[in-house]
Length: 509
Image 1 (tube, rainbow, N blue to C red):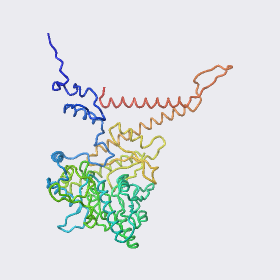
Image 2: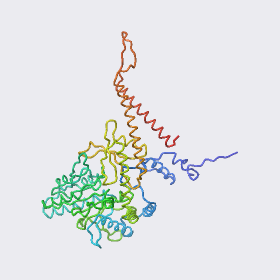
Image 3: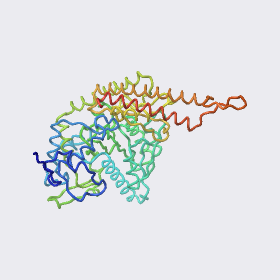
Image 4: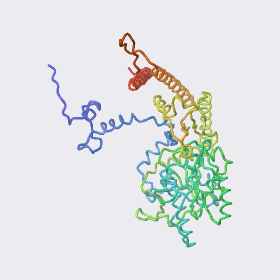
């Protein structure tokens, strides 16, 4: 006789992960569970849920880096337990940050002497860097107004309506009026002339964008500088410029070196750039660089000594990881100028491949520029049967995350699809995306034809039932509800057919 034994619930060592009670029963979602669970079960539960996330490399909505070399991954994991702010305990990490600041400052043509140290700080991203730069401008303006005996309670900042939301956050959080230059169809960046017209004695700075989030276009910072220089001469003001180079700061120096947008222009006093975008580092690193010490008021810098030594700090947060700073330094010495140039040129080439593929379809208007951030923004020529949002939804079936969005005022009637070309987006993927967009268009065309057929047939009289009335025939029209049901049935049939086809393609039984 074979004797069987039932393992107790506490004897977890004999269970496979998926057979254990920890995976077979639900855990509370919004309250901490009362009891502990084994580490392998906790891992499996979380890992299983995360499988439902999108594939980061197919997330074409994001500018943020999604791939780094394995050697850099090792450095990141080795330093993941280091607190960036403990400068006295981790002096080498602090030194690497200072090296990055100086490298970026020289890349942006800061007017530094041979042995002069650059002025800048690492941040968690461009949003924090913009907040810090904005605070510096506000404080400098307030100090100047106080010395002149003038009111200093109504500061404003001039930007285009295409700015990223962090500028709106800065204005709201730190009580600064935001003056926005409206856009127009066909011109989706800030017009320098209109921007300078909005400048007054309360303007703390004009913010220009090197790489618009909407279509990747570089704003004309040189033109803005030249016009603002003349206005400052006429009025006696000294309104400065901040360049939001979150996306373009690690692009322009390598493939558009002749473009004047940085500290070569006298009114540019600070620049922010995202290391986690085209700086080629995972999410969590940005940089704020100032032209000189005079442009960063000393009273904004705090000095602490409770971590072991005097440490200057100018950040909105305190503790944060060191991994991204180390990763940024790795990329700079690993790639060098040559490597970054090659990466950016390759991104631009793949952008051209995608753009030309879309143009051959003759269904889209391209609203992005060849010179700028390597991305393709495009809009349908004909919106009669479907729109960009439907294309975006259907592309998700193929794994692609391609955003659709409306432009800001006064171009909000324009809807756009945008594909960001990052380092890990190859030519093969570009060609595959073009093919999948063609499939989606074909399916939407076919569906639109079916819906039109149903709509047209429901608009005429059909014989649904014959009623004898004095030898005559009465024809009943379909009700609106019946017509809607027929259209819904077509949609359901279409979705089921596509699901069956996808299952077959994916080898799902």
